[in-house]
Length: 140
Image (cartoon, rainbow, N blue to C red):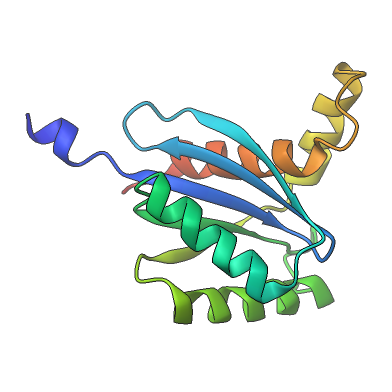
């Protein structure tokens, strides 16, 4: 079945200096699932972890939320993420794509308020929203 062949597994990252949220999904089901948070890792350890996940989960593409302010302008964090993306691209062979995450944090906040037990899960939820938005909009 050619449709099954073209399914792409994606790993989404909500990159932050202290924590990185993770989500997995694929282009067939178009459902993003939160996969936890990586905390307190150096960039090199973080990249090693991401490589391990990519290999273990047979990921075809990494999506990283690109923080842009609501006016569409780059911020200090945009530069940080861009640097990380460049570094990651040097270490893995699959495509690494950025995706505008402008409304992600606000959406994550709203989801968090709905769930009182969600403290600390925000980065994972943000990654999930980034991936969901990507899958919904993707002409892959």
